[in-house]
Every structure is written in C-alpha cells, then in structure tokens.
Length: 285
Image (cartoon, rainbow, N blue to C red; front, side, top):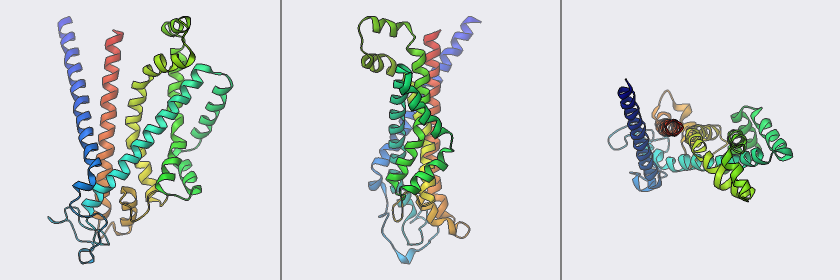
C-alpha cells in the first residue's frame, strides 16, 4: 500500500511537472511569435485593397478581408502585439505595485496600512470593469489610458494577497532571527518576505493576463481603448459588429485570437499553481 502511494505521488509529480514545462514552452513560442508578428504577416495589415472588400475566407486570405479589403489574418497577427503586450505590461505593473503596497502595509501596519487598505476597499467596492470604464472615459480613451484605468482598479487584489501573507510571515521564526541579526526592514522585506510571495503572485498574475486581455478588448470594443485603424482585437471586433450576420469572419477571427491567448495563459496559470502547490506539499511533508 505504501509503495503504491509513493508510486502515485511520483506519477503525479511527473505529470504536474511535464504539464508546466509544456505550457511554458508553448507560451514562450507564442510570445516569440507575437514579438515577430510583423514578419509573420502574409500581407501588410494596414494596406487597403478595395477590389477585395469583405472577401470570404479563401486560400489567399484564410481569415477573409474586412470592409477596406485588408487581410484579416494579417490584422489578427499584428493585433496580437498590441493586445498581448498591453495585457502583459498591465499584469506586471499591477502585480508589482500591489505586492509592494501589500508588503509595506502588512509589515509596518498602523496608519499606512489603514490608508492604503482603505483606498483598496474603495476600489473593490465598485465592479472593476465599470470603474475602469468611468476612469477611461474621463481620460478620453486611448490604449495608454485604458491600461492606466485598468491598473488603477486591479492592484487591490495583489495588495490584499501580499498583505495577508506578510502578516503571517513577519511572525515566523526566521524573520525574528533576521531582526535579531540586525537586518533592516528593507532587507527583511526584500530578502526574506518577497521571495516567499513571488510564487503566489506569479500564479495570480499569470491567471490575470487573460482577464486583463479581455478587459482591454472590452474597453477597445466600446471605443475607450485602441482606435481605428490600429490592429487591436477589441477594436477590430467593434468595427465588424454591424456585419456579424452577413460577414461573420470580421468578428469571429479577432475573437479566435482572444480565445487562444486567454486559454493559453489560463492553462499556464493553472499549471504553475498546481506545480507550486505540489512543491509546497512536498516540502511540508
């Protein structure tokens, strides 16, 4: 029985590790393709050809063309750079800012904790996308303002997670030992507390990339993000929404880009979470 249990644990460990490695490789290849998106486009994504207006999918244009005769496949590929990199930047910025705020609040407490967490509670009190819509509208739209608006409403999640974990860690024996050894607050935060937060924050950020990508696409769809003729998935879907029943590829093809990207990052986040959970159980056991 014991041998069987050990064998199952080894198989589980191998499966979780292989899944995480495969998804990391796939995500890396996907990001590499996004980086070289311009070179992968079969046509100029902004070149208009009025002789090919709204052509259905064909061998020459696998995703069809839009109302200006632009190749939809090229525009979807080019739009990946804007959509994916904007979401990655947003996830990185909000996770870094939220983690730093949560660590400081959890470690020092007092008025700093009360003030920052009060602002976080205020942000959480409103639906995040509705709050972001209001902020983006006040800033007159644009992709940069859409990213800023979403960053202002997304950081509280990371701050709360980091604060909760910091409150637990600062009572640990190794933190007390670091204080006795003369470590400063900055050294304790950066050398002892932060490394214990990185795994959890990385998983949360990975899972959030897909959500942020959809929120950015939503703002662009409503005219508060990227604006035409920019190749951005939400903006492209907005431009073709009036033709959904007659020329569905103008909406479906950028939707495919969103679906594939969101699914990939969600699967990556799940795999990293499973791997880190398994590692924690292994260490704890």
